[in-house]
Image (cartoon, rainbow, N blue to C red):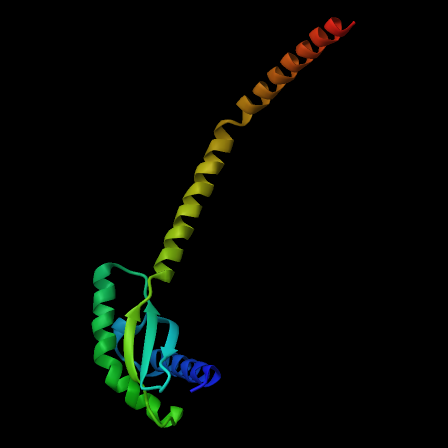
Length: 149
């Protein structure tokens, strides 16, 4: 199969899975699942679905178990709308990208807070130091002018 076809099938599977999670799933373990990518093999017999969830390792394990258990139901619900010759087997794989992004955002926020605290504490000291540096600079220039004459 061509890359365009595989891309269209991946997009259709992603859209349908998202719709099923939002509208028809009664399992509370699947409420916060985000589908990040779908990769279909060349003969469309297998679809690797990458998902992400922000939570602890235990939450991820529980979600993985729920997704593996719901794979048959999801596949049967997708069959009428996808109308493919080979309905792919659904294989769910955890994608840690959202968790990494959330951690980076948290670290950046901490740096911004620390930077704001440093600016508030050292505001007056910087002005005094700058004035002192200018005086030293002027004294050096005067001494250099006397040596040149």
